Length: 113
Length: 255
Image 1: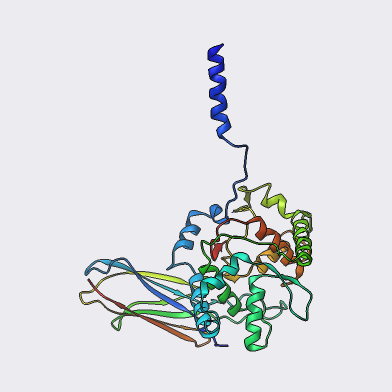
Image 2: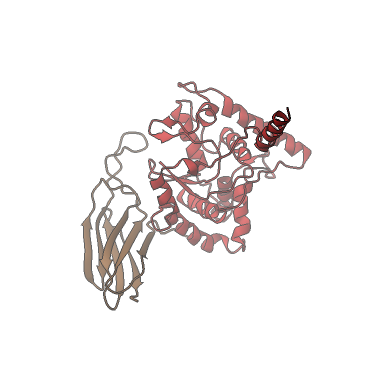
């Protein structure tokens, strides 16, 4: 059986990307966001903390957002930012890393009209 | 006198138009808050799309080789649970997760749990494809099988109306007699099976119908049947048959 990508990611651009107009960039990541406070099966051991520590959204290598998430964020986080569409559009990329050292990334071309 | 006659005819015409009170069956989505409904209908915010993506990946890798037509397979979502017999086993009720687990067993020789990520991902993909199909749970035509099916059905009905647990409540007391009222901060919805698996925000993940029913058992503080038990299957069969003719909602979001 094929091994699944444990952390699927969806990167979407909402709105019409007209130059100098606002569009919404949304990132939805499949991640358990384990707080480290919950107890395991027998009620004895804590489930180790595993949250997305850092997430960066870039446009053409220029950082748009750099966020350190906390344990208060629920599983499968949905983040969204609004940006102004630059003249030539560009490549939007998202990168995240969690406590276990796992990393994920996604890219999407933003074509300006 | 003439006027009176006229009136009585008019009354008759007006009131005979309305049929006596009939039960309007509503899906659980009708009882969601507007924000939840918005999230559910938003393909860019709804977390179940992540499972759908995974399911599609699995489907392409493992299933598409034999099953060419995903729509035909997804038809099972609205037809199941069904009575099925394997050569070396007594016939029993199978739901869609059982079928998926059985199929995976042919590939990898292991019996997965109903909450396994692969099982849920595939189940949710099929559920999504089946969106809009009409539920029809048919009884088996074979006489012997039909009798067994009927037995399971009545067992399900018995569970539905049986008082149980430390709260001494039956399903029907909330899900028939108190629909639309508040249970703490939630609104009680009628027990129609129109959209599973569900993403529950309190679970922070997707769960099968087994998990949902078990949560109800623990809610009334009754002894919780194990997953894949025949008790849960009988109850699911009864609930699905109640929803006969309703439209399938696809994977749903609940609190």
